[in-house]
Amino acid sequence: MRGAELLIRTAVASGIEVCFANPGTTELPIVMALDRTPGIRSVLGLFEGVCTGAADGYGRMLDKPAMTLLHLGPGLANGIANLHNARRAKSPVLNVIGEHATWHRDTDPPLAMDIESLARTVSGWWRTSRSARDIAGDVAEAVAASRLGQVATLIVPHDYQVVVGEGHPAEARRVPFDPPEPDSIEAAAKRLRTCRKVALLLGGRALRKPGLDAAARIRKMTGCDLFSPAQFGYMERGLGLPFVERVPYFPEKATARLLGYEVMLLAGAREPVTFFGYPGIKSQILTDEQERITLCTDREDVVEALENLADALSGTSTFGTGDAVFARMNRPPLPDGELTGQKACLTLAALQPENAILIDEAITARFMDFPFVAELPPHTLLSVSGGAIGFGIPCATGAAIACPDRWVIDLQADGSALYTIQGLWTQAREGLNVITLICSNRSYRILQIELSRGGITSLGSNARTVTELTNPAIDWVKTAQGFGVPGVTVSTVKDLARELSGALAGSGPRLIEMLLP
Ligand SMILES: Cc1ncc(C[n+]2csc(CCOP(=O)(O)OP(=O)(O)O)c2C)c(N)n1
Ligand SMILES: [Mg+2]
Image (cartoon, helix red, strand yellow):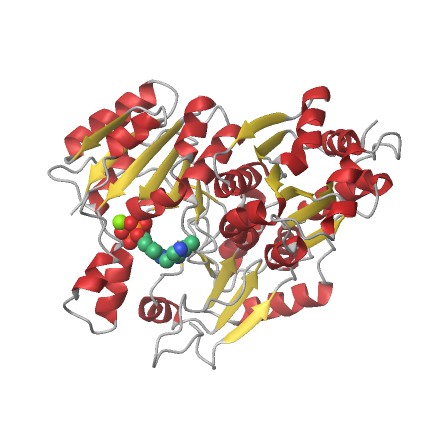
């Protein structure tokens, strides 16, 4: 058996089922091994950022890794921005990168690059295999590491991939999360018993149903309020789940919202900080006087920590809220008239099907809608966790492959869409149930807003040039069609409602350009 087959057989044994690939010559033995060994579905992405974003979306949805197959350093470099989002989302992802043959590497061939240095910036685990014999163990270890909610990157020299007869496939490995520290749980319980105003900030796996259930128990007994970071990887919401408020994006609003809390309890999330350093505004959202308590580390199981905390609090009811912590159904009615960002969100809220997966890369078009969306049928929301745009289309692609029975609706800002637009082709080729709603404001609006926040009221021609997406305007319908996805443009709520309902009644990918002011 060749090294490449050891790699694939071990990946299959470790639970890998999908490979988002954009290979080159140094990965061809692995491509051949994917052909010879059943168990992994290969999906071609036409840019590495599509592959990595898709693996992120897949990992978020299933809480288990997909594999990417990327070509040398330049291939990994093209995929880094979405791996950065995956790292921030605590997504499990396995990257496999081919490297030049060890006997060739020292000649410094044109594509040679320091791959490990790139891998290090986004990966919690990385390694270059040291022999063909090591490959299987390396894969098993990489997959186990990724399951802790991190990116794992394995670099495999070409000569080791083609060596025959060295080593055996390895069994799946499991590295469990560490158990939570009882002292941290007790310290948190103590403050929750005595403190009236506590914000419980949930991140990572705490925003999945088991974590939310435990958080709801804690809220019921103590009256604490539940928050998520402004950017998060994965959140389940809607009917029957507790209402979790997103910390606002802009620092003034975030500080104002959190000002009344004496304590912030951090469960799988870091203390919130401003997205950027603004002159005259502190980086921390919390004041120095507000107490921070960390419930557990990233190596510990946040869900178990929340469950232990709820158990430790049992019987507590000092500031409890009783039962009213779960969202009910309260769909907004369809608005009418010309579309705005808010009306687009309301239309989606009025029509989204049960168990929809919503991808939020709407940037400015979504700022308004958050309060409405908790009282809808259950759904999952994925956001641009690391702020690196070009995430939505790839992430939607991976989420649809992970969950073929659910609709994926990508609320997608226009500028961000264009970073990884070729992901539409993968959606078409794989026949994925993804609806891309383009928020077509024909600008990098957020940058214009940031400029006006900085006191710039009229833009010069250079500032306009780099923030407007006009001249020429993007033809979204033709662009989508060029990649094999049917597209349409709408400008009113009525037309959007008709097109969205029509898309939901059918199957396969669609793109709807929503003309926004
Ligand atoms: C990889 C990456 N490149 C650039 C940026 C900077 N950036 C943030 S938002 C943005 C433009 C967003 O425009 P659009 O997607 O159209 O959303 P809008 O602001 O119009 O709602 C840019 C260029 C970034 N965050 N990430
Ligand atoms: Mg825009």
